[in-house]
Image (cartoon, rainbow, N blue to C red; front, side, top):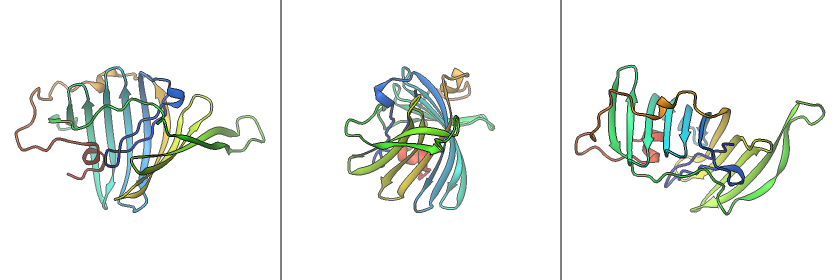
Length: 209
């Protein structure tokens, strides 16, 4: 089952899979906000472990400016596509990032187990486990369900944004439309013109470019 902790390099990107079980494909929605209130976003996230593909469709607000964004990341090709399906436009850019398989970092420690809601009656609560750790000097705390190992939320520390909170919901194992992980037919086969910066996770998640 999918358990995702979303970060970025220099912010890092950590994808977590409970008990080191591998998930081939998944679709998940998440809501993300930052401690310094610079960013909030709502996104749909498609993940294909075998093909090393990720698709993100986002809408949100960065530094009080609204944005929408649609990106397809093909790690084996070291390429990403910025897609505007409504306008049928597409840019192909180099991708400066490694694919991160979904697994629990080795240094994760179990904080404890708790019930969200109530344990007084059947169906009134959700049993969860909380984990914590530190990667490259960045602290994180993340919570998953005990049954199914489904992500509930995660918090991770960044220098620029403070603590970043991500809430997960509507996790679906498997992708009903695998075409979401392929470039649309109107996308170019060649990279965009010279001078285009290659993309990393910080720029395409936080729209810093």
